[in-house]
Image 1 (cartoon, rainbow, N blue to C red):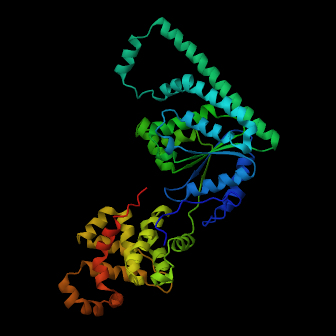
Image 2 (image 1 turned 120 degrees about the vertical axis):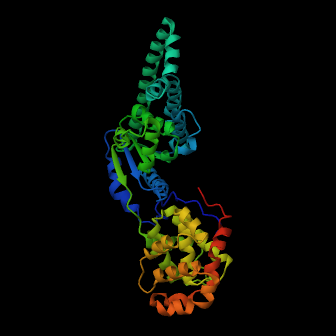
Amino acid sequence: MDVRLEQFQVPRDDPWRNDKLGRKTIAEDVLTPIVCNASQPMVLSISAPWGHGKTCFVNMWKQHLENEGHLCIYFNAWETDYIDDPLIALVGEITEELGEDRLGKHAGIGERLRQGGALVAKYAIPLVMQLLTAGVVRSDDVAEAVADVTTDMISKRIDDYKDAKQSVVQFKSTLAELTQSLGEEEEGRHVIFFVDELDRCRPTYAVEVLEIIKHLFDVGGVVFILAVTPEQLQHSVKALYGEGTDAIRYLQRFIDLEYRLPQPELNRYVDLLMNRLGLKSPKLQLPIDSVRAGIIAIAPVFGLSLRQLEKIVFQLALAARCKHQLSDASCWFLFFLLAMQWVKQDLYSSFVEKEDMNAVIRLAKEIQNTPNYRVQEHVDAAVHIYYMSETEINDRLGEFARKHKEYQYLSEFSFNVVRRAPAVLALLEGFNLED
């Protein structure tokens, strides 16, 4: 078993080799034609909940488009969140891409973009951001500023405005020259930006990026693809402009088209994880088919994202590695508790303290059995065992099982595993798997 959750790899010669979620068709048959046929500047958002594979998808798609001759720039907004001006970071990514040998013939344009971006950052961006903060700056600050205004200062501001306007015109002209140059090489080539993790940025930074895209990169042949969780981006807008802001309508100013990635097939992804994380290793002697069935039955109860599911299966693999020959029922119960720990932390804390038994039982009863495996009854029985006192376990368990037919599976459990499950999870907590 690998102890590291390996970084996703995108082979240059075969971008979709590791596409285990079957998203190649979406990119090649649906989205690529839209991007390649865009005659006007366009902003396309690729949306999905957190942890549902947006970054992996856009990286595979980016390489596919690069192989078709487009100039693609990947921009991780969150990694540049510490920079005051996102334009500097965006232009830096362009010039770095243009500076590569395979596109060296455009290096001169890249240098002029760099210089033009510096001028825009000096003159235009401060003026734009002052407009953005309208209503946010305190009135006493405004009053103090007005009191200090002189005729010379007003004159300077007018000159700054002229310089800002000219710098924007020059920057967009140079960018248009780049897209025209690409089109001369082969018709239909575009400059395509993939902007990732924007919804994780500071609200001010996220909005600045959107404003810069709208006002400075509004050039034919330029396409922006935003990989976002829309609800999180809406929170950023409201954090900056107030809870009463219509964030959906605000974002529609910037996004021309939205595509929601479909929910991936759970069976396929669980198979991928079990293979990659070593749960199918003969050394563990796990009943693979039943463990897989249990994960597929329990995961929907908690609405796990792909990333959460990966972390939980990884923890389950660690538990199996530490404790050989876990039964299928034990694996199901551990997975149920791990999912509760990740998604319903308050309820899990109550469970550890042997409180809120009914709430935990209700959750267990939401599990849907799969063919050949009665996962729900096993997990439900394990929950009851955990809440039993030592006296009940020793004196009443047999009678309890006989009176309640649905608990006939109690005899298949190792009581020690059930009672010790929270302790096992407590040990696993020492492995910090948070992002």
